[in-house]
Length: 344
Image (spheres, rainbow, N blue to C red):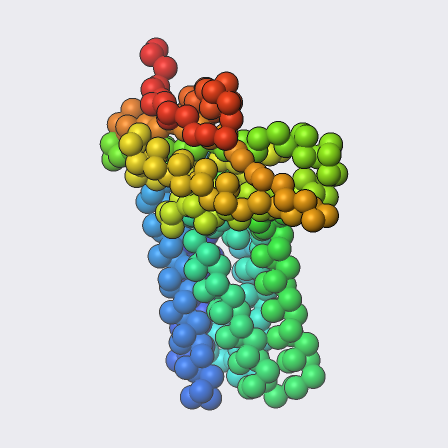
């Protein structure tokens, strides 16, 4: 994991240094300003990867699967960028600098960066994604305005913008549930692992909530799977409204959702669960002029912090709480359980 994050730092530092040289050497004052801004933005990328590396070293972010494959991909990006970088950047004219910048950003538009950012960044950090989109758009606009070969420049700029959009779609497919727009199981479990590591190190509570749609099979059997999908979307939207800004929500599988509640112990977790319950109750679905009232069963679990505990242990505790809610008649939130690390 260390090598992966170090490689990300190295690649963005290469881009930062290249833009710095372009900013100092470009004959156009306006274009020089653009390169200087791009250099600043790349420096922020370097700082972010460096922060992630530091967090990993202190156990605050988890290792990820297929590390060797990811490292191989990053090494390939590094090698490709090495082949396109001239020995004397300052000797390039403005057109050549724009061409190099476009190629540099194109090779940096690798799904691995977006996936790492979404899976490892707290809450997915959508502002970081938007920031990089602005970074690419800034370069595309500069190419269109300042490149002397208009036809090829416009094509190049549009290809950059399209490549960035395609990248974001690809990343969404890997960590987001396409039906509800929430994190998928993989995405939400990655964030849970991070917050449990944080809880262990800083002795702070973390809670989770499991939400199961009541009688979902009956809805599917009675109204069809199209209505069933709409029910899942409505429930997802209701959970978003009931969640706090710091909470992370995912579709855990089928008709089950998981909400991750950082800095949340037992008493506060009960309030979160009750609010989710009410938000679902107040949002029915209409099918052929028939109002279908929705309800969910909710269970929860929390850890006090300070001891190493696996995600599976916390989920198992929340699942037992969810079972209590179902046994008590559904359409309710059960008392959350405190999860403890197994005694070895």
